Amino acid sequence: MRSLLSTIILSSGLLFATPALAKNSKKFENTYAVPVNSVKVEVVLSEDLQWRANNLPKDRKDRGSARNNRDGFGGNGFYGERDLSKLVSRLEKRLAKQLEKRGVTIDPESENVLRVTLDDVRPTHPTFNQMSRNSSLSMRSVARGGASFVANLIANNGEEQGDISYAWYENDICNSVGTTWSDTNRAIDRFAKKTAKSLAWN
Image (cartoon, rainbow, N blue to C red; front, side):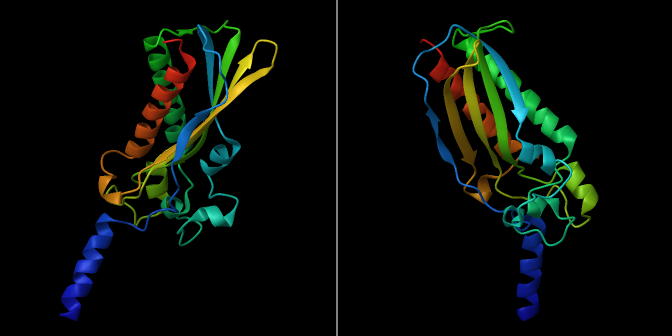
C-alpha cells in the first residue's frame, strides 16, 4: 500500500512541478483624469526582468522554490531574451488593437506618450531556456502564471499626466493550461483592454 501511494505521488509530480513563488493580483488603478485622442506607445521590460532573462532574481526572497542555481522555473528566472521579446511585442500589439478599437489613434508623433513597463511575468510552463538548463523540466511541468504592469502617461513637455498599475496572476493551478505563457498572455489582454478603456473618451 505504501509503495502504491508513493507511485501515485511521484506520478503527480510529473504533472505539477513545484510552482514558483506565487504572486497576487492587483486591481487596475489609474491616476489620470483626461482622456486622449492620440498616443504614442512605448513598451519596455523592467530592469528586474531584463536581468532575469539570463539569471535568477538578485533578491533571494524572489527565487521561490529554486532547488539550485540552475532552476529557473522554480526560481523565477532564466526566461530567455527571445521569450521576453515576444511578450513585449504581444503587449505592444494588444495595446494598439484595443486603443484603436476605442477610437484612440496610435501616432508616433503624438504629444501624449504612454510608457508601459512589463514589470513581472511568470510562465505557466517552463520556457525552452529553462528546460535547457534543467533536464528534470518538461512541458508537463506547470505553475500559476501571470504578469504585472506599470505605465505612465507623459505630455510632450515631459510632464507626467498620471500613471497606471495592474497585476493579474492565476490563483488556481488547475486552470493553468495551454502554452508556456498562457496566463501571462491572459494578463496582457486584460491590461490592454482596461488601459484602452481608461484612456478613451467613449
